Image: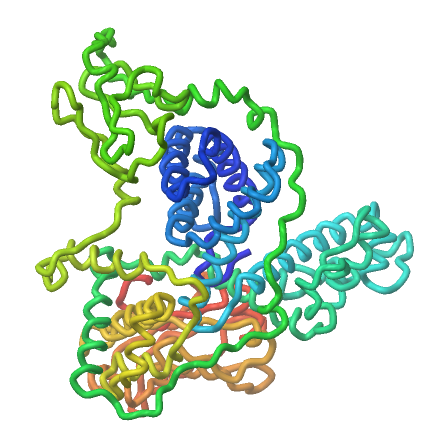
Length: 610
């Protein structure tokens, strides 16, 4: 399933879930649930466990359709867990009710990361679209995507599942006649909501259990009586899957330019402080329906773990505690000398008992590696277990200065005043990381796109209440980032003499008969006029375009291409800013554009393809 901003997709999520569950079992062994810093210790152990597994086949597998691996997605979820301690507190409360075994512990870990996955994707969706979305609504999107793929599987093999396919279609299917719906179902946008409802109802008779829409759970109760809502969600999934088939490569920007939105953020706040717009405040109200208000529930019982997930606990512990450096090609590895001088001379900073650690203090997962210059202290003290998190330890006997720093991504980001006001690219990236790394429980979009766009343009500074809402809502700041980057991209593209092209996309509702389509920058309109049993395409330039005068004076040659690269029209602008040609394809404009990438590109004729 692909939606704007989402990263966790099937079937890559199954591998992410298994990798997190495997590392969590090893990380949770020996942890004291009563310790207040248990989350920090768990994140540290998970980082070590994932790092040890990063070269495995599962960690290197593709995690989604955008090129991210299972390892990268798993690490991202662990980082999000550290920034959202509420999910960890709920997990600890579940553990306190009944001390689970390995199977139940893995199930609770899966539930925790599944809820966290939906929260992360829901926040990213809101930042990318500007529309409210709850974690339960995101889970409903996933359920509908899974239902569609199961319906498509049944339709593809309808002879073996004739009775269930007949129950889904609501009629009997003859033996020798293939249902026309099986050929019409090409994408998720073609799936009908009544098929989803009947599929869920048929699972109890053909699948051995009730479907997701026919259980006692209230999670999808609102969808059961709202076929129109199901149809809208299916169209949205199919629409974006078609638009993102190019893996968003057209929108990749240089890393140095992606952080300049921070300057826009500070400028918006400064303009609001200097001359705030008088009220009333345009604060969005919380908009939630029955689907959004439904709480999260445990994930379905996963299938039995494969043999590689059920290794001996002692072997897992030893594997995570050993880190072998890569061998240098062409050189014979020389045995390393182990010294016993530092073996019992570490004391963790902040230990209440203040007693020197000995070999008896070493836990099974913290035995130091006997390598000169690469030592580390014990990770826990069996006497008090009250050390502070992320200290730098120092040998108390030899004072060699060897330290064990915390992982870089787990340290709190503290910026100096000089760095906050520097124009250097590195400082901009640091400020961006500081703004984007914030999380707030129950956060939602506080300002609409029109208010944020007016603040970016300087036409309407934020009021004092809107400025406070922007500063207090990390999700609204992320939405401002999306709008600021899009605004800068349009500004760079509209400079007179530097226009390189404009792109337009079609939505799912644009299929069929089309009258006109508009580019995303609103500067070009492509009209379709029926004439003599065919079609004519007319390209029109908006007079408010900043480069309109230059193009009209030069009578610039232009070309319009579809998503597959085919030329729709080519010619020069006339005095009215229009270019006209006969529609060159047999299919109607709407059907042709939907079948060829659902997009079109307007570009200078002498320019390279976008």
